[in-house]
Image 1 (cartoon, rainbow, N blue to C red):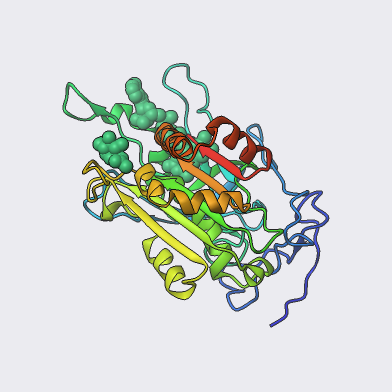
Image 2 (spheres, rainbow, N blue to C red):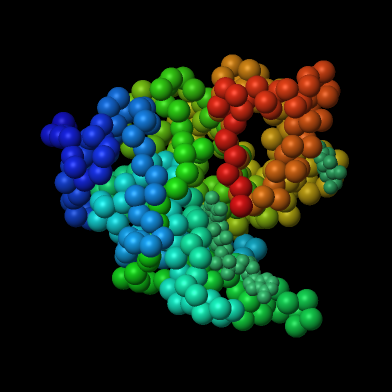
Length: 340
Ligand SMILES: Cc1cc2nc3c(=O)[nH]c(=O)nc-3n(C[C@H](O)[C@H](O)[C@H](O)COP(=O)(O)OP(=O)(O)OC[C@H]3O[C@@H](n4cnc5c(N)ncnc54)[C@H](O)[C@@H]3O)c2cc1C
Ligand SMILES: *[C@@H]1O[C@H](CO)[C@@H](O)[C@H](O)[C@H]1NC(C)=O
């Protein structure tokens, strides 16, 4: 079905953004997802950042909050859907800021903003263009003396978000960031996405955009999107059902590899960390990068040293100068890192 589209003023200043007036939840489920596309769809020159600022944040409303890991997962991770009424456009790979309510204990000032990668595509999980989703891990503080979690030191914003219920108001800023966008211009582009834990968030948005929606981007896509996810065990996997679905429906265009550090062993019998899983395919990955693939990394900062050491080792074995190699990929904008 073809949907009437028109240039909209909803996206302040983004005159190339095609939009419908923001539909109410659930009203456009059968529509083609073409109402939040730039013209042409891969033109990112009008991608907005910081539409909503710290001093005048947007107030979003929680639609639902759901624990999405199994009982044996290390820690708790929640999927939170937030209604933005269509007033907070973003695209895949961007983040939202959240200002937790209340004030800091130390000086009575408002809490600082925390960033969260958006885990949905621009259309939101319900395809209305009026919601966005976050994938948040509840930050806890393990007290070595108490040998237990110390509730006084738990993370402010992640606990606020994971404890939110339908209707909870969320002060939001952004959208933030452009380093994690998908280039989209060449539909044959290969994507190599490497995530640990909640670092999966932007890649869930990518996968939904590439494979689950009826967009010009999805219809054009002919490349291979390859997702690596590292978590502790199978209960800690995130969005596995969706990724399995993409894999069975698009076996030629979507690949999926998991590194389960507490369940799998690497070649030397050690724990299977993300860099060990990526290393298994080093030849293929190097060839893909040589051919113009884009590589993305997202997750905790601590993932990068292991990745870098592994890549440096692979370069050495191939007689490649690692520093030059990385520099070349960065210059060609094939290298995308967002770690925290
Ligand atoms: C670009 C970007 C994207 C991000 N995306 C995501 C995402 O998709 N999902 C996600 O879950 N996170 C993401 N983050 C991280 C997120 O922004 C927050 O840093 C995280 O949720 C912790 O914030 P908090 O307010 O819960 O913890 P804070 O209150 O800021 O505390 C930070 C840590 O310190 C500990 N702590 C508190 N008090 C003490 C004390 N007295 N002594 C010792 N330790 C203490 C807390 O337990 C916590 O682990 C992202 C960060 C960035 C920069
Ligand atoms: C496997 O794990 C061991 C022990 O942690 C580590 O020394 C090694 O670098 C890892 N990777 C490979 C490919 O063996």
